[in-house]
Image 1 (tube, one colour):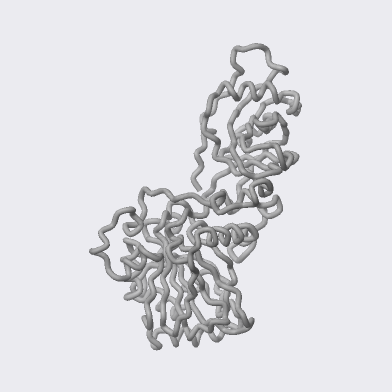
Image 2: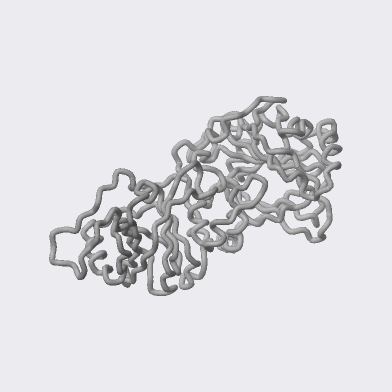
Length: 431
């Protein structure tokens, strides 16, 4: 996540020469504008380490609503955000009593005061806002704000959760202007629909050894570890099959690297989402995934569904999605890797927002009902889901692989080349 932080090198802000304020202001380290669409605002997280850099000083954070002048005060704490941010960034968090649902927002002002005693935020609010107005229309701070969905706006909309990705550095086929006459049929389908369908692409001689190995796993969703390719060579032979890698490389524009598998023989039932919003921003479109049918896919088994052309929609943004989480959800982690569980926890409002967008655009959804050996490659920004089965317990034998361009994963420096393709190296045990 890229924050437009202006905290480093901050100088204390002095009150302007003006008529005396309603109450004398304490020394201020930060005066920043924060814009949010949440209601009941109660938590603001900002990048930086103001708190950690002043461990022996008394720091207090104050939030003032610009519209009403209502103010709240709370302690400023430093934390490492455990999976909510990429990298080892630290942030400062202030938690205050929730602002009222109606009347407040969307503009708040954040002040950090250095004072021995906790200041009376409400008494200082007029002077604080007067100071803020002298700063002009400055850009808002890149902060994460948490509360509840805004009631008056009709709930959380897709536009509140997404934005267009940075056009700089997108893959060749994602560029606005492309000479389509020079493209292969697969590249044209990729550019038009965000998918490529390869019928009968993989033979039994490649699939059957893996199927035999997978049948030994007595678990519908297969191996729990996200990287079984590390230990299962039969799987690696399929996912790095040279003809498959040639096509994938031509769609993205550089050699691709395998870094995730899903080995379930049942639908994940993960509802509508895009894959790439779970990746760091520097991936920026250099991402693709592959769905491989290991048998005929029963229509009642919960097939893979997608929205053709949705790879051109705005991209879900992790920081926008997370702003509507509850306090308990923000701090919860789960899974083999200990990664944050926010992608699943936020589906309760992400799914309705996407469903409303699909309905508003009047676009079709499709199902992939493959036969053994059929392959579907999909764009990292394609809207898709694992649909719910009509008859629970019906097998859906499949194998899924996720890939990123080798030059766009500096966070995965350990990699190898085998059987025609690259794969990222991890030390997760096979289980």
